[in-house]
Amino acid sequence: MRLPGFSPQNITTANKANPASGEVATPFKGTRSQASSPDSLQQGTGKNLQTSGGITQLIPMLMEEIISALTGGSNTEQALPETAPDQMPFEEVVATLGRNENLLKKATDREGIEKLIDDPETPSDARKALSAVLKDPEIFAALDGAKKNGKTDGKISSQDVQTLQQNPLIKQYTDAKSEDYTHAYMPSDSAPGSAPREMTSNDAMRELYLYSESLPKKVNLETLQKIADGSQDMGKCPPQVAAAAKFYTENPDQWQQLTGKDDPSASVSKDRLCDLASYNVKLAPQEDKALKTIKDNEDIFFKGGGIKPDKLKDIANNEENSQEVRDAANLMSQPNSMLFSMLDNGKHGAGGDFFNKANDKNIGKGDIDAFIKKGSNQIAAPAQQAKPSLDPDAIAAQQDMTTGKETQPDEKKEKGGGFYKMLEVFSYIASAAFSFIPGVGAAGLAATAGRVAATTAIKEGAKQAAKEGLKEGAQQGAEAALNSRKNGGDEQLNSPRVWAQS
Image 1 (cartoon, rainbow, N blue to C red):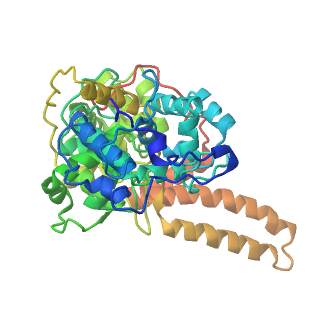
Image 2 (image 1 turned 180 degrees about the vertical axis):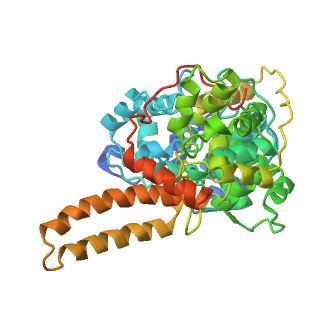
């Protein structure tokens, strides 16, 4: 569905400026007048556009305001350009590109856009939106001149997209879509073909955890509202995340229960939000089974040290292991596994500390024990399936959810561990100073290489020692120095993927 008659011309080219000449296009006719300013479009003339109804109910009201704005409040009909029936509407193009802003971090010309369309890594919804941009000169011109007050340079960037997303009409459209997503939710870590369902607080916290790398440093209800209406700069914001944000803005009591913040304007850091999610999350049945399997088979999972992605792939591919063990390792080895990430930071949290890194991809026994001690130890209840519907908005939301799963979360970055960074600096300073001591000469330089190698091995052991105890960590460091296993991250699993959610 779309906003009838809503086109780029309403937003950026109402004065018929010539994009090729670099003329400045007026966003709205009489943009400073009360009748046609963006604020007047948002608030309406006696109409309440902040409706809780679906997009279909919102459209007639929006169009009445658009016509009123363009005609100065008169009732004279004005023909507005329509998007072809087989082409993605302008407002959907903007909303879709807004969910994939990371693709346009750098200003991109037509040739660059064509490369993005041809790139198999580009999500299919973004490819469709980018194709619409190339096919429709009006859409291209609207995006091209958005950030530069109508001046064009033949390139489009995420800043151009963000500028259009600030428009009240686009925000209302995107916010209404986010509401639809909460009723057609499909988890980003669920198996293909999973049925749409009603989103829960548990679902919402999972999605915010998974996509935490895309969240701003501080999050509150205002931030979540901006995510829901598309006006928050995110980089990656698939429908799953938009739905999570909308769920909490519609259910502020659930947000208060999660964060413990009575003040709606109070913020939490995204690291703290991840910790709160790990304490409160109810695991999916498959995840709970995997966790119990690991606890019951510690001799397999902790043989030779902590649990790392490569080791999990080895365990999953080893036919001598039981199917339960292989399935648990398979699930945990998947990119962006929420269970792996939560266990990885079980002991020291998502932000780490001075002596311990977060997201170091090395799970110790202490991490698992801490996760179990701090967590809810509950299993999520069966999902409430969405009611079958022939409503175009519901169908579109389900389609967006399906394609949204193509936009997987960014890998979580290492944090904390300042102590070991300090060791690295001191090691290099000491090595440099040692090489200048008279009488040492080449011997000192040769020894430097040996010290660097030894430091690396010892440091690995020291990190593990901080988690599991000095003896085990030192032993693992020695093993790392003596043995170099050719078992890189490119190794593939020999069995079908075990999904976190069905």
